Image 1 (spheres, rainbow, N blue to C red):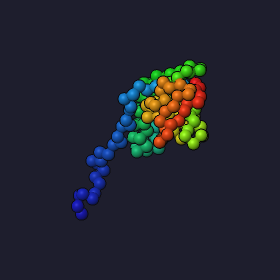
Image 2: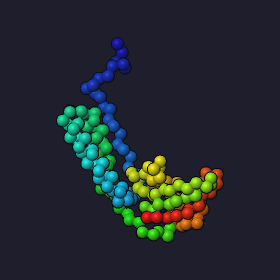
Image 3: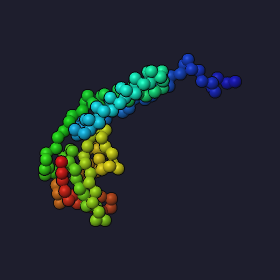
Image 4: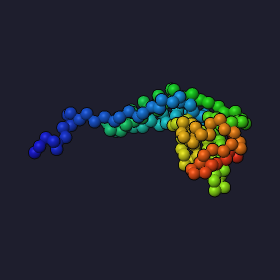
Length: 154
């Protein structure tokens, strides 16, 4: 049998690639910082369980993820939003009136906290970049039309 089809476990060099860390400042909301801290605690508990089970594959994945989330937690810069922002800034909630007349609310958050389906968009996303610095009444391009900012909250 050809050696090309045999896996030599003594020379297995498969390693998990590191999770990419953004070049952008790690701005976080208070909620985002709490989520990072909770994720580090979860991973530490998972690591203990994986050690007990001697699960080397899980240990490798957990170690990689723990390095990432510890680095993100350590580099986090918590930002608080003014109670009544006059312009869109990090942490603000923005309600847009869309071309079809419906409204949708977005909050500008840190990269690790982003969840577009829940209306949480990263402050470095294209939509967030369009929103930054705008105020109630301003319009911005949205799909093939435009959307208007109808409310701002912190």
